[in-house]
Image (cartoon, rainbow, N blue to C red; front, side, top):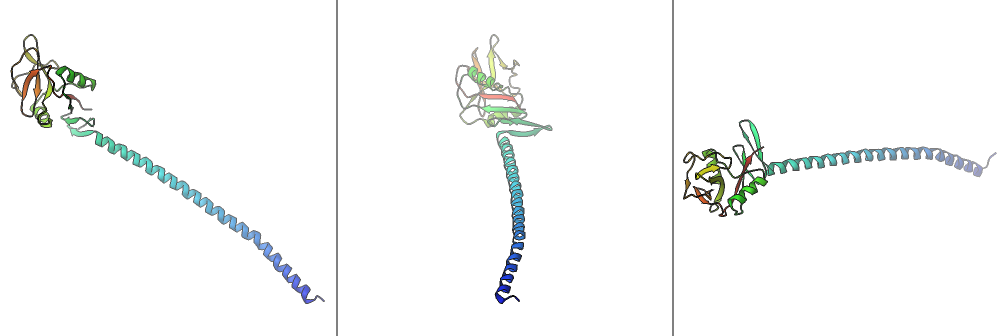
Length: 205
């Protein structure tokens, strides 16, 4: 017959054995739970990175579009959209750039040619009013109109003859070195070697 001490030792051994059986299962469950949490965090991290990249791309696209809208003058005329660069004004399908530098007529024309443009050739009263309204007070500017020799006739730079008083008249005396200058209220003749601001004109795209 077993003594109480022996029985107590056997009970302790059995309890320890049962505990040891459950410990691997507990560790296995803990590892599985840890693995699930790790995978979930990994997935959430990837989703977060994807959302961040989409937000950056979307913001970059929006900034470019806003920058384009700010840099371009856009209007609709006869169902067509016309665009001018940022420092040009748009009117009737044409772009105009008003210079703030005083130069001779030839120098101003050369500056316009570098911009694939030319000094203005006014074709109607609306264009005349637009240019005069856009000019700053006290800053007369060159037009693409000059006197040819011989004949002393006003001719546009596109070689079309200027018809006096059809749209406007050129005030003042003329000679073989006369070019036209426009102000906010009139057009007058000046020596082509005088220095005034230039206006460049080109077709809108």
